[in-house]
Length: 312
Image 1 (cartoon, one colour):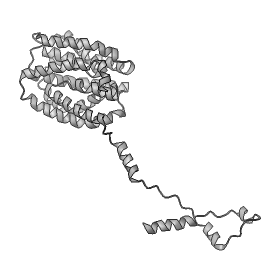
Image 2 (cartoon, one colour; image 1 turned 90 degrees about the vertical axis):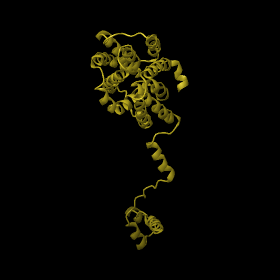
Image 3 (cartoon, rainbow, N blue to C red; image 1 turned 120 degrees about the horizontal axis):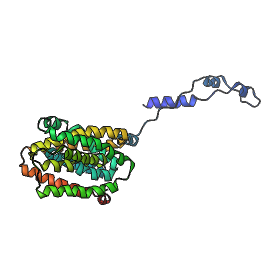
Image 4 (cartoon, one colour; image 1 turned 45 degrees about the vertical axis):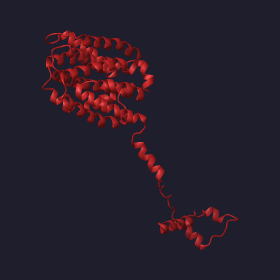
């Protein structure tokens, strides 16, 4: 390294441009010696490439990696909890993740991040749920959701969702009251009721990814056991996710801002799904219904826009 540096210094000192013929022939020009003329014929060397210091290398690495600030750890912890809830009850992840992520990163990132993470990580659960679900109840609900998701997505990208979120609070509260009242219907829900429930769920999904309460109340008010309800939810959410991804792509909701959120969310969400799924097989059916009621109650509270200033 020392010999190379010394060679560079010698060559840089030799790197003097040769005077032009006009300058040499002009009066007052200094007479060049043969040695200086020989130096003038030496080619110019380009500047050496810059060598990055330790600090500059660290800057490049930190630009690639996510910023490990408080938001990173909030997303990681919430994703673990949300994954456990989703693995156990089949729903509820959006209720936990979206209010906080939306407050930290904006409503578009909040809605699209959980859509991507959940859509990828719940594929194994979907394959198992196809055999256990009740297609006659899932199909009309999914049809209504497919019709209403683009409407909610359009409002997400064009208007302020705050008034709509306020309007959803009493609706979700009413659904919770129905569940708490103990009211049950017998048999398979009628096509019209399932279609309307799916439309309400799809609208909320497109707007704020909060689609669980309408369909949960519909299926919990029927004669279905927890295994069937959970399977219905997984299949229904999978269908909705496909429609929502198409709708979000057309509307331009997805952006590169998703990456810093997905880095902590995906691994923690995956661990939570495994833990919640294992506990579901051991839990009593009454526990399942209690958890569902608590989650719907949390949806009523967390959907209030007034809490955004405290979650931020």
